[in-house]
Length: 117
Length: 114
Image 1 (cartoon, rainbow over the protein chains, first blue to last red):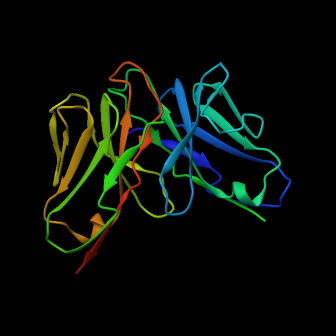
Image 2 (image 1 turned 30 degrees about the horizontal axis):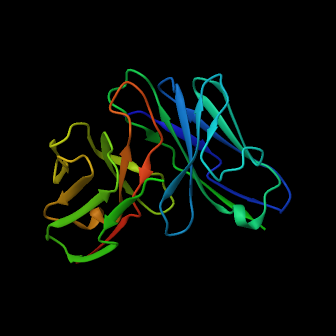
């Protein structure tokens, strides 16, 4: 099946610093990538939708200036958490969708656990 | 916004038992998906449903897309230890040819006692 790689898998940073998370589709071209956030013992919540070459669309309540998304190629999207604070600590998961792969299936990365001290 | 009500929240069963969980929505989705998530991992797709009334099986798993497009269930037959994990339903507005973000249920935590 399709493979989506997410890096890093775990990151610890100091409050006020920025963290970049990468999401790569390894064996298909992802026309659309999605970023989700999952707090402990909770469900996944969609943060933003990213189409290659265009600006990301953010869900209500998600600050676009805090969560910068770049989808510069068909195989890579990045999420940068700027000026991270402890309340940003969460599990961030990306998914990728590629046209022609059948249905509306999104393939998920393994997630990135962010801990802000 | 749209919400998915998933139940039960958790299940404690004996190995070999059958499992049933379901999701309901206040609004229509044109695609229903079921995922399993292990601790510290991303969700893995189990079954995708694209048509109202559709019944689809994947090994010991069977899922159905409700006729009203507002609900879906997942059954697991003859549970085994590796079935332990959190199961999520997810709804999607799109019905094919495009992609929308997913709306997830709150998850069903399956625990199997040997």
